[in-house]
Amino acid sequence: MFKKWIKVLLTSIVILSLLSGCGGQKNSQQSEAQKIPDIPLPKGGHVKAVNQLPSKPLRIAFLSFQNNPFWYPVRDGALAAKDYLKNFNTTVDYIVMGEDLKAEKVVAAMETAIAKKYDGIAVVPIFDGTETVINKAVDSGIPVFTFIAEGSKPSKRLAFIGQDAYAAGKLAGQIIEKLTGGEGKVGVITGVLGATQHEQRKNGALDYLKSVKGIQVVGVYENHDKAEVAYTLTKDMLTAHPDLKVVYVTAGGPFGAAKAIKDLGKTGQVKVVCYDWIPENVKYVRSGEIAAAINQDPFGQGFDSLVYLYNYIVAGQKPEKDFIPVKLDVLTPDNVNELVGPEK
Image (tube, one colour):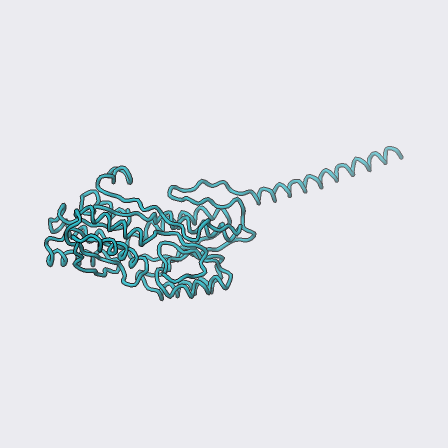
């Protein structure tokens, strides 16, 4: 009887051990599944994902344009965020809204993203009139983060990361004053008339230059962000004004203006002031046609906007401010090797 009791006891212990082992294995698997990945930020990314995983797989739409080389580093930042956030059970869809900067392109892409019920949307809205569709997304429960440029009318977007465009324009005006010594003719090429960011950059410079009595602005022209149009406009301005000193390009395609100056043998006599450290611009900074290029960190904007959005969706964490300004670093022939490295 005693031996039978011992046998039953030993059997019970074995069964309990097995059950305990299964439970421990299950708990270990659950713990492993909930482990937060420790992924280093890529070079150029500034915002780290919160230490929390989503309760379900997430889908975020990144809506951008592609009408000139400026958008390549924006794309690269978004794709870097796509690779980074896949470790956090999040899928990023990089979507090109089109080649032409138009409000209706933004509205159409936003409507599609809303219909597909993304968990979040990062978008470059650029124009007035896009605030309505942004509000529609937010009202339907989809948070929206804007980057690069937005319209002047307020919306319910979570936050905006980008350049203080008017301040950047004022800085450009100050650079123009220094380059000309406060005297001479200046031509302005803007991207799209009516695009808020382009208008603010233009007005920031022109408002500042009004106080510089020796500066004459010979005209404001539109190139739709296209380098080939900037090339033709610059040649036309130099034909009409051989004594032109500066071409100020507010948006895309400044390397077209620089090429026109080089082709006409005007290097050193006429200088371009513009934006962005893309390779096409850096080439002409090195050769001297572009005297100053103001940065707006396109890679960082592409990456950070998506991680900010993830952090809000997962943890309700908002950025400290609803406008996150980028630094206005200036690239010149004197510092190009220091800031972007020697020519390869």
